[in-house]
Image 1 (spheres, rainbow, N blue to C red):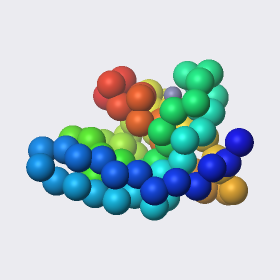
Image 2: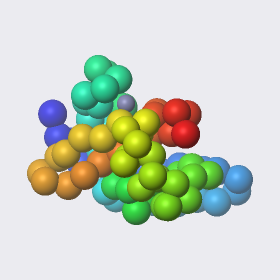
Image 3: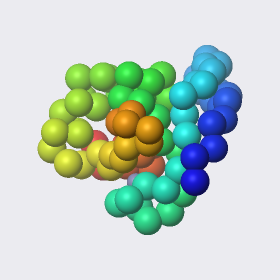
Image 4: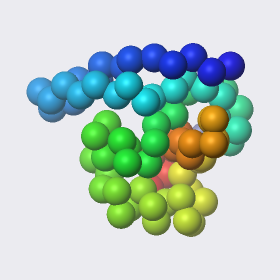
Length: 80
Ligand SMILES: [Zn+2]
């Protein structure tokens, strides 16, 4: 179920707002989790965009599509 949300994530004294994050079902995890667009991934993790793209291509990052937008499972960042 699509539920647009505003997420505040504090990391290393930085606070970022992610209007595009979705709490959605990750097809690979099989549970609802935070899914973010690849471009937003570096803002909430220590992973660079280049590494995110690599992870998607290698299939180690979980992905899903909501309204045609590619989203990446935050939980799968531990696979990198
Ligand atoms: Zn996942």
